[in-house]
Length: 267
Image 1 (cartoon, rainbow, N blue to C red):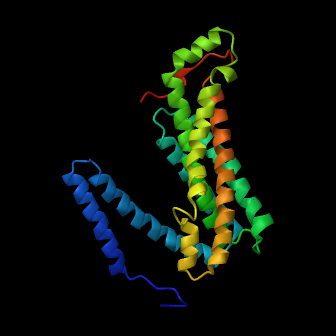
Image 2 (cartoon, rainbow, N blue to C red):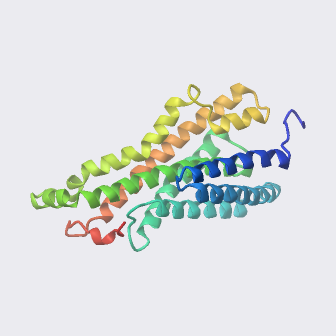
Image 3 (cartoon, rainbow, N blue to C red):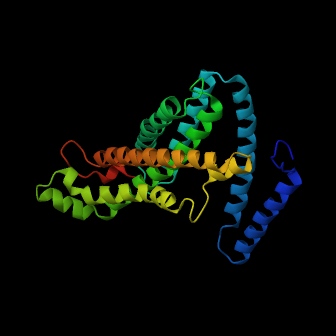
Protein backbone atom coordinates (compact mmCIF):
# COMPACT_ATOMS: atom_id res chain seq x y z
CA UNK A 1 0.00 0.00 0.00
CA UNK A 2 1.29 3.46 -0.96
CA UNK A 3 -0.36 6.72 0.12
CA UNK A 4 -3.55 4.83 0.96
CA UNK A 5 -3.69 3.16 -2.49
CA UNK A 6 -3.50 -0.62 -2.72
CA UNK A 7 -1.13 -1.54 -5.53
CA UNK A 8 -1.87 -4.42 -7.90
CA UNK A 9 0.76 -6.97 -8.83
CA UNK A 10 0.96 -8.43 -12.32
CA UNK A 11 0.07 -11.89 -11.04
CA UNK A 12 -3.13 -10.45 -9.57
CA UNK A 13 -4.05 -9.03 -12.97
CA UNK A 14 -3.25 -12.48 -14.34
CA UNK A 15 -6.04 -13.95 -12.20
CA UNK A 16 -8.52 -11.56 -13.81
CA UNK A 17 -7.15 -12.51 -17.23
CA UNK A 18 -7.70 -16.19 -16.46
CA UNK A 19 -11.34 -15.41 -15.69
CA UNK A 20 -11.68 -13.87 -19.16
CA UNK A 21 -10.10 -17.00 -20.65
CA UNK A 22 -12.57 -19.14 -18.68
CA UNK A 23 -15.41 -17.07 -20.11
CA UNK A 24 -14.02 -17.53 -23.62
CA UNK A 25 -13.87 -21.31 -23.11
CA UNK A 26 -17.46 -21.27 -21.86
CA UNK A 27 -18.69 -19.35 -24.88
CA UNK A 28 -16.77 -21.74 -27.15
CA UNK A 29 -18.36 -24.78 -25.54
CA UNK A 30 -21.73 -23.08 -25.82
CA UNK A 31 -21.10 -22.40 -29.53
CA UNK A 32 -21.79 -18.69 -29.11
CA UNK A 33 -19.07 -17.72 -31.56
CA UNK A 34 -17.56 -15.15 -29.19
CA UNK A 35 -14.46 -16.91 -27.89
CA UNK A 36 -12.10 -15.48 -30.50
CA UNK A 37 -13.53 -11.98 -30.10
CA UNK A 38 -13.14 -12.16 -26.30
CA UNK A 39 -9.50 -13.24 -26.52
CA UNK A 40 -8.67 -10.59 -29.13
CA UNK A 41 -10.50 -7.87 -27.16
CA UNK A 42 -8.73 -8.85 -23.95
CA UNK A 43 -5.35 -8.86 -25.66
CA UNK A 44 -6.02 -5.47 -27.23
CA UNK A 45 -7.06 -4.11 -23.84
CA UNK A 46 -3.75 -5.09 -22.26
CA UNK A 47 -1.60 -3.85 -25.13
CA UNK A 48 -3.48 -0.58 -25.72
CA UNK A 49 -3.71 0.37 -22.05
CA UNK A 50 -0.04 -0.50 -21.45
CA UNK A 51 0.99 1.71 -24.36
CA UNK A 52 -1.25 4.58 -23.32
CA UNK A 53 0.13 4.30 -19.78
CA UNK A 54 3.67 4.97 -21.02
CA UNK A 55 2.45 7.73 -23.32
CA UNK A 56 0.55 9.48 -20.54
CA UNK A 57 3.50 9.30 -18.16
CA UNK A 58 5.68 11.02 -20.77
CA UNK A 59 2.92 13.51 -21.58
CA UNK A 60 2.37 14.39 -17.94
CA UNK A 61 6.11 14.96 -17.50
CA UNK A 62 6.33 17.31 -20.51
CA UNK A 63 2.90 19.01 -20.22
CA UNK A 64 3.41 20.91 -23.50
CA UNK A 65 0.36 22.16 -25.39
CA UNK A 66 1.57 20.91 -28.77
CA UNK A 67 1.94 17.33 -27.54
CA UNK A 68 -1.39 17.41 -25.76
CA UNK A 69 -3.02 18.74 -28.94
CA UNK A 70 -1.38 15.94 -30.95
CA UNK A 71 -2.66 13.37 -28.48
CA UNK A 72 -6.15 14.86 -28.70
CA UNK A 73 -6.02 14.77 -32.50
CA UNK A 74 -5.04 11.09 -32.51
CA UNK A 75 -7.89 10.29 -30.12
CA UNK A 76 -10.35 12.16 -32.36
CA UNK A 77 -9.22 10.38 -35.54
CA UNK A 78 -9.39 6.96 -33.90
CA UNK A 79 -12.87 7.76 -32.60
CA UNK A 80 -13.91 8.85 -36.10
CA UNK A 81 -12.69 5.56 -37.52
CA UNK A 82 -14.59 3.60 -34.86
CA UNK A 83 -17.79 5.51 -35.69
CA UNK A 84 -17.37 4.59 -39.35
CA UNK A 85 -16.59 0.92 -38.68
CA UNK A 86 -19.64 0.42 -36.47
CA UNK A 87 -22.15 1.39 -39.14
CA UNK A 88 -23.97 -1.37 -40.98
CA UNK A 89 -24.57 0.79 -44.07
CA UNK A 90 -22.00 3.54 -44.04
CA UNK A 91 -21.92 6.55 -46.30
CA UNK A 92 -19.51 6.21 -49.20
CA UNK A 93 -16.68 8.50 -50.20
CA UNK A 94 -15.34 9.02 -46.70
CA UNK A 95 -18.49 10.83 -45.56
CA UNK A 96 -19.10 8.40 -42.70
CA UNK A 97 -15.67 9.19 -41.27
CA UNK A 98 -15.92 12.92 -42.04
CA UNK A 99 -19.37 13.50 -40.54
CA UNK A 100 -18.61 11.44 -37.43
CA UNK A 101 -15.25 13.12 -36.83
CA UNK A 102 -16.53 16.64 -37.42
CA UNK A 103 -19.55 16.18 -35.16
CA UNK A 104 -17.37 14.85 -32.33
CA UNK A 105 -14.91 17.69 -32.78
CA UNK A 106 -17.64 20.33 -32.62
CA UNK A 107 -19.27 18.79 -29.56
CA UNK A 108 -16.65 16.98 -27.46
CA UNK A 109 -13.78 19.42 -27.98
CA UNK A 110 -15.97 22.47 -27.40
CA UNK A 111 -17.50 21.10 -24.21
CA UNK A 112 -14.13 19.87 -22.91
CA UNK A 113 -12.40 23.22 -23.45
CA UNK A 114 -15.35 25.04 -21.87
CA UNK A 115 -15.21 22.78 -18.82
CA UNK A 116 -11.44 23.18 -18.44
CA UNK A 117 -11.40 26.96 -18.83
CA UNK A 118 -14.63 28.00 -17.12
CA UNK A 119 -15.56 25.28 -14.63
CA UNK A 120 -12.52 23.30 -13.45
CA UNK A 121 -9.87 25.95 -14.11
CA UNK A 122 -6.53 24.12 -13.85
CA UNK A 123 -3.35 26.12 -14.42
CA UNK A 124 -2.53 25.95 -17.24
CA UNK A 125 -5.97 25.15 -18.62
CA UNK A 126 -4.58 22.33 -20.80
CA UNK A 127 -2.99 20.47 -17.84
CA UNK A 128 -2.88 16.90 -19.19
CA UNK A 129 -3.96 15.30 -15.89
CA UNK A 130 -7.34 16.95 -16.43
CA UNK A 131 -7.55 17.52 -20.18
CA UNK A 132 -6.76 14.03 -21.51
CA UNK A 133 -9.00 11.96 -19.18
CA UNK A 134 -11.89 14.40 -19.59
CA UNK A 135 -11.57 14.47 -23.38
CA UNK A 136 -11.28 10.68 -23.43
CA UNK A 137 -14.55 10.26 -21.54
CA UNK A 138 -16.25 12.83 -23.75
CA UNK A 139 -15.04 11.24 -27.00
CA UNK A 140 -15.82 7.70 -25.85
CA UNK A 141 -19.43 8.45 -25.01
CA UNK A 142 -20.01 10.84 -27.92
CA UNK A 143 -18.54 8.23 -30.27
CA UNK A 144 -21.15 5.71 -29.13
CA UNK A 145 -24.01 8.19 -29.52
CA UNK A 146 -22.89 9.34 -32.97
CA UNK A 147 -22.33 5.77 -34.17
CA UNK A 148 -25.76 4.65 -32.98
CA UNK A 149 -27.44 7.71 -34.47
CA UNK A 150 -25.84 7.41 -37.89
CA UNK A 151 -26.38 3.66 -38.01
CA UNK A 152 -30.08 4.05 -37.22
CA UNK A 153 -30.40 6.87 -39.76
CA UNK A 154 -28.78 5.06 -42.69
CA UNK A 155 -30.43 1.73 -41.95
CA UNK A 156 -33.83 3.40 -41.56
CA UNK A 157 -33.45 5.29 -44.84
CA UNK A 158 -32.44 2.08 -46.62
CA UNK A 159 -35.36 0.08 -45.23
CA UNK A 160 -37.96 2.82 -45.71
CA UNK A 161 -36.72 4.15 -49.04
CA UNK A 162 -40.07 3.57 -50.75
CA UNK A 163 -41.89 5.47 -48.00
CA UNK A 164 -39.46 8.39 -48.29
CA UNK A 165 -39.72 8.50 -52.07
CA UNK A 166 -43.52 8.39 -51.83
CA UNK A 167 -43.46 11.41 -49.53
CA UNK A 168 -41.18 13.25 -51.94
CA UNK A 169 -43.58 12.49 -54.81
CA UNK A 170 -46.38 14.03 -52.75
CA UNK A 171 -44.42 17.28 -52.62
CA UNK A 172 -42.81 17.00 -49.20
CA UNK A 173 -39.44 18.66 -48.62
CA UNK A 174 -36.60 16.21 -47.97
CA UNK A 175 -36.43 17.50 -44.42
CA UNK A 176 -40.05 16.46 -43.83
CA UNK A 177 -39.78 13.19 -45.75
CA UNK A 178 -37.10 11.87 -43.43
CA UNK A 179 -38.17 13.67 -40.25
CA UNK A 180 -39.43 10.61 -38.32
CA UNK A 181 -36.35 8.56 -39.21
CA UNK A 182 -34.09 11.45 -38.19
CA UNK A 183 -35.86 11.84 -34.83
CA UNK A 184 -35.63 8.10 -34.17
CA UNK A 185 -31.92 8.17 -34.98
CA UNK A 186 -31.29 11.09 -32.60
CA UNK A 187 -33.20 9.32 -29.83
CA UNK A 188 -31.17 6.15 -30.35
CA UNK A 189 -27.94 8.08 -29.94
CA UNK A 190 -29.04 9.87 -26.77
CA UNK A 191 -30.92 7.12 -24.90
CA UNK A 192 -27.81 5.25 -23.58
CA UNK A 193 -26.49 8.44 -21.97
CA UNK A 194 -29.89 9.31 -20.50
CA UNK A 195 -30.19 5.79 -19.08
CA UNK A 196 -26.70 6.06 -17.56
CA UNK A 197 -27.63 9.36 -15.90
CA UNK A 198 -30.89 7.94 -14.56
CA UNK A 199 -29.17 4.87 -13.07
CA UNK A 200 -26.07 6.65 -11.69
CA UNK A 201 -25.72 6.18 -7.94
CA UNK A 202 -28.74 3.88 -7.69
CA UNK A 203 -27.99 0.97 -10.00
CA UNK A 204 -24.27 1.59 -10.51
CA UNK A 205 -21.35 3.71 -9.42
CA UNK A 206 -19.90 5.40 -12.55
CA UNK A 207 -16.33 4.61 -13.51
CA UNK A 208 -14.75 7.96 -12.76
CA UNK A 209 -16.30 8.16 -9.30
CA UNK A 210 -15.22 4.61 -8.51
CA UNK A 211 -11.68 5.35 -9.68
CA UNK A 212 -11.40 8.47 -7.57
CA UNK A 213 -12.69 6.69 -4.47
CA UNK A 214 -10.26 3.80 -5.00
CA UNK A 215 -7.48 6.40 -5.39
CA UNK A 216 -8.35 7.83 -1.97
CA UNK A 217 -10.37 10.91 -2.92
CA UNK A 218 -13.16 11.93 -0.50
CA UNK A 219 -16.52 10.51 -1.70
CA UNK A 220 -18.11 13.98 -1.63
CA UNK A 221 -15.47 15.33 -4.03
CA UNK A 222 -15.77 12.25 -6.25
CA UNK A 223 -19.53 12.80 -6.42
CA UNK A 224 -19.08 16.42 -7.53
CA UNK A 225 -16.69 15.46 -10.31
CA UNK A 226 -18.95 12.61 -11.42
CA UNK A 227 -21.99 14.90 -11.61
CA UNK A 228 -19.96 17.36 -13.68
CA UNK A 229 -18.72 14.63 -16.00
CA UNK A 230 -22.18 13.10 -16.46
CA UNK A 231 -23.65 16.47 -17.40
CA UNK A 232 -20.79 17.21 -19.81
CA UNK A 233 -21.13 13.78 -21.42
CA UNK A 234 -24.86 14.30 -21.86
CA UNK A 235 -24.31 17.68 -23.53
CA UNK A 236 -21.46 16.47 -25.74
CA UNK A 237 -23.25 13.30 -26.79
CA UNK A 238 -26.53 15.11 -27.39
CA UNK A 239 -25.13 17.87 -29.55
CA UNK A 240 -22.76 15.50 -31.33
CA UNK A 241 -25.61 13.17 -32.24
CA UNK A 242 -27.81 16.04 -33.42
CA UNK A 243 -25.04 17.43 -35.64
CA UNK A 244 -24.10 14.03 -37.06
CA UNK A 245 -27.66 12.93 -37.82
CA UNK A 246 -28.56 16.32 -39.30
CA UNK A 247 -25.53 16.32 -41.58
CA UNK A 248 -26.07 12.68 -42.47
CA UNK A 249 -29.71 13.34 -43.35
CA UNK A 250 -28.71 16.06 -45.77
CA UNK A 251 -26.13 13.80 -47.37
CA UNK A 252 -28.85 11.26 -48.24
CA UNK A 253 -30.43 13.71 -50.70
CA UNK A 254 -29.04 15.57 -53.71
CA UNK A 255 -29.68 19.15 -54.78
CA UNK A 256 -32.89 18.09 -56.54
CA UNK A 257 -34.16 16.50 -53.30
CA UNK A 258 -33.87 12.96 -54.60
CA UNK A 259 -33.07 10.14 -52.19
CA UNK A 260 -29.60 8.82 -53.10
CA UNK A 261 -29.22 5.28 -51.79
CA UNK A 262 -26.14 4.93 -53.98
CA UNK A 263 -24.40 7.08 -51.39
CA UNK A 264 -24.72 4.19 -48.91
CA UNK A 265 -22.73 0.99 -49.00
CA UNK A 266 -24.69 -2.26 -49.05
CA UNK A 267 -24.81 -4.39 -45.91
